[in-house]
Amino acid sequence: VERLLRQALGLDPGCLVGNYNMGVLLMKFKKDADRAAGCFRNALKCDGNHQPSLVCTARLCAEKGDRAGADKYFKLAMRASDGETYRDVKEEYDRWVERSLHPGRQRWVRKSRGGTFPREE
Image (cartoon, rainbow, N blue to C red; front, side, top):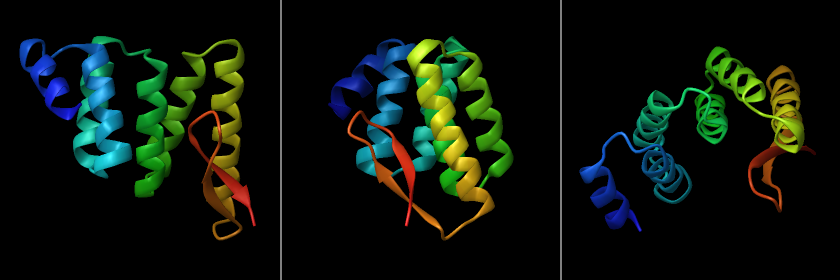
């Protein structure tokens, strides 16, 4: 998959879907947050309201301890969302805020629909 994404991005470096998918691959499977962040930045250059890229960027900021960045990107993602996706992003944001205010009381877990969310201990 990575090889195919690299080929696609070689043909069109500004491809929104290619950059987003490469970022997800790097974030989830390669554990390369810096390169993933670069891919999400490239995706956001194509579409500054691309909600999945905004959420992933917020998650990367949160994992790095960049509270201001996480707050900014979660809020941008909420503005770019509607309906059920808004509720999902808002729920993740609220839990992130609670976790950042009370570190150690929660740990991150994966929900069945995808995404990483905190859970109370």
